[in-house]
Length: 337
Image (cartoon, rainbow, N blue to C red; front, top):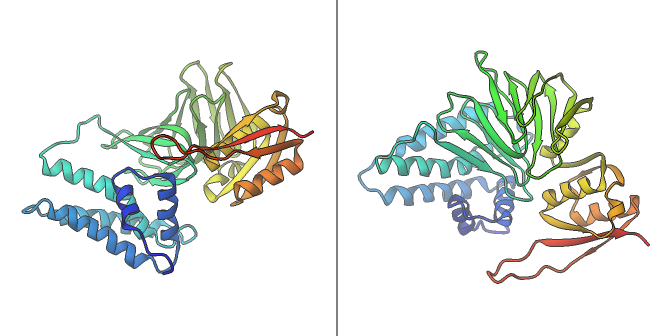
């Protein structure tokens, strides 16, 4: 390989102290051919080091249990996403594996009300799978919480997520957001509920969902290709017909704007590219924009945006902060003169 895999980045990921750049680098290694063997070696070395720190304890049964689960998950996957799914699943599960082992070694138990959390770093998109087999994706800066003992299929999300819910003996699956509760049996849908956003939305791709209000009393049922948008300030919502797959295209690396005001377009780009926009002309906020970008860089999107909208932009230099990290890239947007 041209670039050797950095074990320090893997260690930072497993310790939960990784940066967005670490995450992207780790993901790029998994996507390259020829990396499966060295990554597998690093993961097992990490496991061995942890195992050696606790002599006299036979922990291999835990690793074998996780590997069996990875094998079952792998059989359900297509080859269209990551061709090294087994190694990716291993590295994603290992932090939870180490936590579980720690609890066992210290004779601790998992409380009935204990919750786990999966977080997608800024500028990244993260695949997840829940204990009941339900799978999905988290968009940039989003998180999902779920009870470790998953007898009650109830999760909480902040941000945007796509769900492919497994049907299970007519047991309901509930997704809780700050403003809405979404109840399903088995279906595919997208939900966006970022903190401080003016809108929360649910878009149904397959099956049927019920949407109930938390801060205001209402109940709606959605059919495929329907979108429910809730205005958080006015506490009102409405249903419209849409192309549902275009609203979840972000998980495939597509940045899509659906006749949205420029203010919403820039907010979506902030999360997508982990940057900050400053709009100097207020009248631009309501300029309506429509477009689709597939794996384009920030510079490419900005050039196309300026070509089709009456704007100009200026990218400010990043500054080093007192702790040695760099500030977020800031982009000034103003009306084209």
